[in-house]
Length: 447
Image (tube, rainbow, N blue to C red; front, top):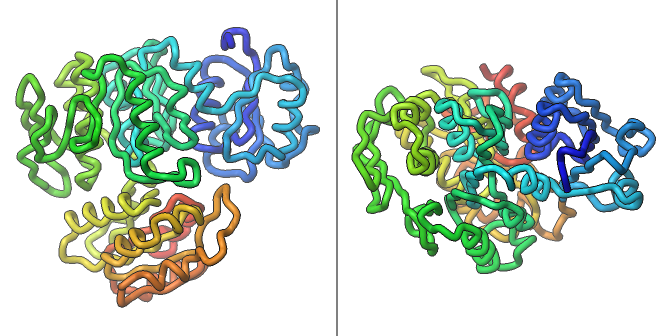
């Protein structure tokens, strides 16, 4: 498919974080863009402000006439949309060029020098840091991100077209659509078992992804993963290592030992060892490519973070409210490590919304163990996303597995009262479902 011959791009599920980045991109390069989504959000509002026409009812009649020309219209859809969706059925049955988001991303980046960030955790933060570093270096590049960066208030960083930065998503084996020139793998924990069935099948897909790089000196691997490549780690014997860590006024100060030299006096503001690893591999990929060290160091110090990735909503002497997207036991463990490192003597209340019945079922014991480490735990009902309920898989089941003394099930309407009735100084809301839509209300009512 020749994208230059495409005039119109229609998105079925335009409000998704990955879909909206593509919509922004096509709009920015002069294509006519429109789409459907289920409900209005901050993301769809921002797209509408760019002049993109969006409707929220599944109706072929609402598709504007210019997007019904199959000769010059590309249709992009997300696997989250059911095949029974009437608009998607219309496009597929009328011989439109319909492509999954991952396929389109692969087409866009195929003729670029592609930096790909893979891993079951850390993709969005790592790719956002890398995109920011390259922007600080004024590289000719575009970064397609899976979150809204605090530096740019966008999930797209557009500064040219020679280089691309992309998240290599393992869900639905999407990352096999990419043609990376440089790549990293941050983690390979079991996840998406509704797709893969077994953890070893997920690992095989990462091996297949890594084999897309013929030069393993351009593959950066978290130390300890069972793959060959350039290793990185925090306080570890690796090719790239962060050392001499100090926390001063809540900011990390450290050195980076590279294969060539020891770099000192580096600062980074995102809490948690997992974020130090994310910063390190982003730095390593850019450093290895030859970008100027002083600019990369400046970029690390000026990175502000990603929305819903350990995002401070309130930060006072009496109350700290942090929101995070964590939805896997490993990610919850990382949040626990970060918050207890920064606030070792303070009580923590966590409000968690499980995401997917299948993930809850697959990792029930791990979820229970991870959540039980917090002082107080409040559970919301499971957010189903694309799934139908599984008999017996409920938040009540998860609650029963937890060893916490202070735990209970609540509704979203009870979140604020639970926070106000707690003497915890640190409040966490975590989960990948619609708990994120509650954050502004919570912040307003407890602040």
